[in-house]
Image 1 (cartoon, helix red, strand yellow):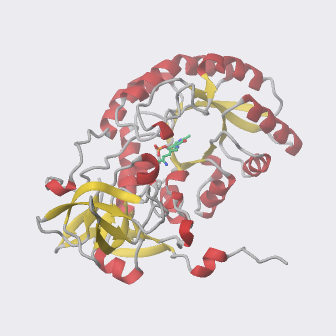
Image 2: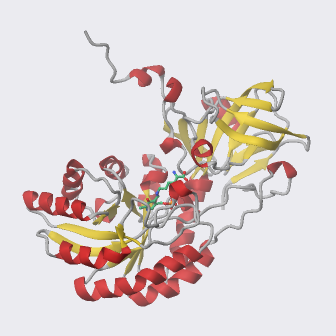
Image 3: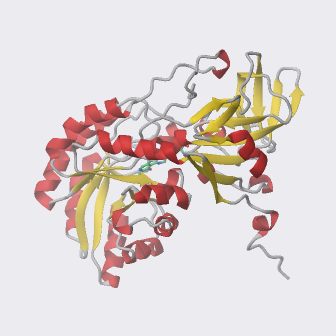
Length: 428
Ligand code: LLP
């Protein structure tokens, strides 16, 4: 579900009028719906309830401490990829004992930090990393719990930048040599082998690659359970969401886009639970996008209209530095006016002020007529939106707001110019 709808001619997030919110806080502005995030968490947990299942939210998707806090309060664990994310999780009231630590390049300092915080498991991605974890654990006189990330060589059928489970990707340890890697890890001091992990990619819109990967890896799980008494199998994240026609009455032509065939949680569970249950161990899921993607919107204001000889450009005050997905992955985000539009539409490019031709949110898209001063919403921007934002072109980072029912709370202030130069100095 998501919680964006028109009411009295104005787009609302839950019970909050987004036009009024944008007037009050300015644009660009990220707004998230707490109700949507809770709904997604509970739907996923319910769908997997036949399993001993722990959801470890992929912190990287949206790491604002208010978002982490609300998931921590529901009992979520966290999949982290840096010491910084672990710091955030604990600041947000999350339990380090429910954290799994992924990533191919954990530094010595990060390993020390995570060992001090007694995380649940390092999901190790190479033998060199396991050796370093063992060395650091010995120095600290503690035991490190680890899982190995297996690369099952399965095609996730997603964008090449977010596909991770093929042999040519840098992630995990090759399926063909994983047994030997476990063998060697088991021989290292101060290492407790706790599980097996995989993650084949992100924004998967079909269950079949998950099924293929689980079927391929299940016999290995059984073997590892027998041999090393592993207690968990993490199948990673990757559940895709709908990016097109996301507003409920998506019948108007200007919402455009091809029909997406969404992967439903019910189908995901129906196909995977029967494969996972017989394994008889704890199943970890690491969803990021599914949890927060459709819960967020990026609001922007139309600054100018410009008629080129080939195109009409709507220049808005948000840019690729605020939301990089269209520029980086050709990602589609629905664009809707905050004032409910009439049926009049035109074909336009929606572009930002950054000095790059890649700075666009839509090209040749049929949108309702937009005037300068109108506010628009870029939908499904809750995942990999703000977290990938930068200060490029010395643009301050936008504010973030969390909405719940009729109230709205600023969960991150808009950056000031002073923030832009904080920590910089002029030498000599
Ligand atoms: N677990 C691991 C080990 C991961 O690397 C990721 C995402 C996840 C879980 C969560 O995947 P999700 O459920 O969100 O698909 N910036 C890109 C997505 C990068 C995903 C990186 N890894 C985008 O905007 O599409």
